[in-house]
Length: 198
Length: 198
DNA sequence: TTACGATACGGAGCACTGTTCCGCTTTGTC
DNA sequence: GACAAAGCGGAACAGTGCTCCGTATCGTAA
Image 1 (cartoon, rainbow over the protein chains, first blue to last red):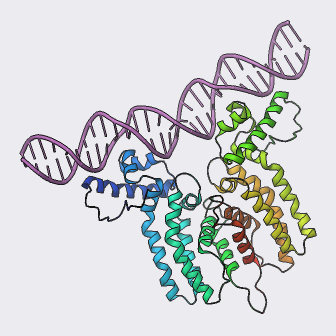
Image 2 (image 1 turned 180 degrees about the horizontal axis):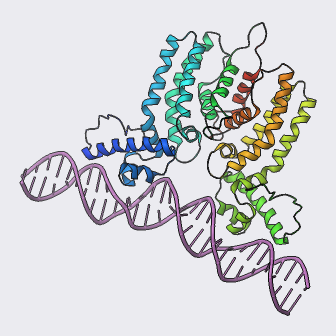
Image 3 (image 1 turned 60 degrees about the vertical axis):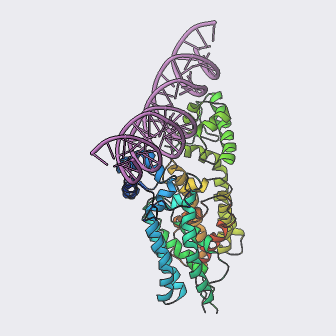
């Protein structure tokens, strides 16, 4: 599953016009439904919204993860691309890392249940996990390495682990005023810093 | 729901012998099933294991959370009680906090999907969230306050938020060798420490 | 323009799960 | 032993994921 690129402007020659149209309709419908019902909204709901049958969804997006990835691809891409620019523009690598992490957290917390889905170990979301992490971990690693090289943080932390940790901190009941993922992510990043030499 | 105490040695006078027996059988069956299939194992599976009908489960434990709470009550209790003793015995409040958090993390990671369930915002697990947190947050707060008073960590962190953060870090695919919740929890606690004065 | 094969569509149907509800059984008591 | 209350079991209903195949639509070649 999902080695192919089921969405976007594919170089696919052999595709019928109505199929292409449906794919777009589906993407739009899914995006709308995700906002109101979360990323684990019933497939039927998305199908109804798009005015197509369920078979059509499964044909275009074999797993739920494929659909979610297609919907958020642009945003993930943007986040990934922001990494190097932040590194170039920010005052220090650590500052860049912080800003980049902010971007990532913003992305996650504004999507109902996305973080949950990404870390969940069931429900056909495994591919989601893979895609997001494959794309973003290298970017994070670059920022991390730069900060280590600059002596701002201790070495030894793996980008994969950090990303998962941040993702995990974004999981949970939405909008509980007592819980703000950002504060905890900030704590995590503080924990990364090397002890101030006295 | 669940203000009552459906499990354990209740002072209930008016209970039939078979009902009591079933309650124990159910608890044992649930504990066994949770180990192999996680805390969101199908109700039918637990019922079958215990050799009772589904109605019996729902009568004794109206929500899934009630059952989970009943199964783990002792362990949560033990964890809660360990707080004050650690504070009394450890070298410093921060050390006590660390050891206590270790206890809590151990508890969570050894239960398939417990952390997930606890933070999930659906599936009838809300009560679970409440029970665990109601019981443990005060303990955590005590340790936190002591560490603040001792000048070991910065003030301003809420126990509730910290507990949720720790819980969240324990969520996810079990036994991915690249992800160890303990390392991230450690990072979180480091982030708590006040900057070393230079 | 028409005819025809390939492509895509729709949704009925199956499997699985949570949850309720009520006729039947067991228990405790008189 | 008889009877009411307490408890039990599991059929039945509802919501969901996912598959499968008869039918409709598209693109093309005649």
